[in-house]
Image 1 (tube, rainbow, N blue to C red):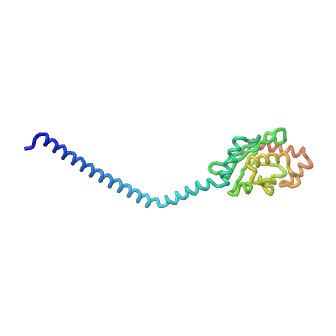
Image 2 (spheres, one colour):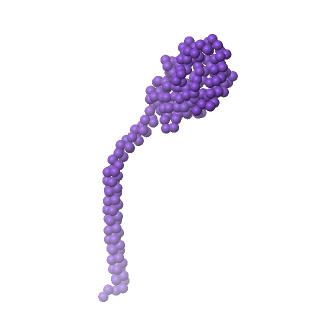
Image 3 (cartoon, one colour):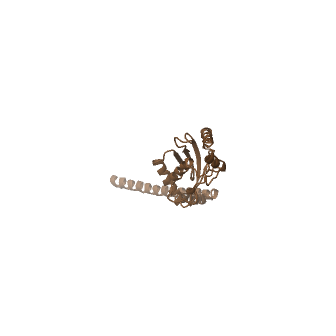
Length: 217
């Protein structure tokens, strides 16, 4: 007949063995169920959404294109324009498109353009800064070197372009052009003739353009 201490020890040993067995069975069951559910989920996902891998590639491509030399340069131009904006100009990329900018040039003080707010767009390509942007006035203009569609006849936007020019330099040059046109290379022959032959009438037309800029969308 077993003594009491031996009986207690034997009982405790059996209980510990049962606990270890149950623990092993529970762990195995959980592992199996978990992996089974995960595998079924992955299989279902790949069946229903086979384009997920394509989307991932698209995302990687999008991130890569955000790091092109042109986009890096435009981000730098924008930062400098915000930190040290020249007087009378403002510009920023459109939402989600750093290659297309909106800008505003304010008419220089003490000139016929004084008080005007003139809107422009700048369209860049991946060749920037090796090639200039396409710049166009959205506001209605009357100027010897601005075409009817808002395009600008300016040497730095054509044959005199240099990669050293930043967005701020482009806008500053256009602002200077307003008060210092070149009638010998006209984009608007009527404005060029009026500037040369009848400055009073030319300035009167400019005042009309300035007033229209206040209400233009």
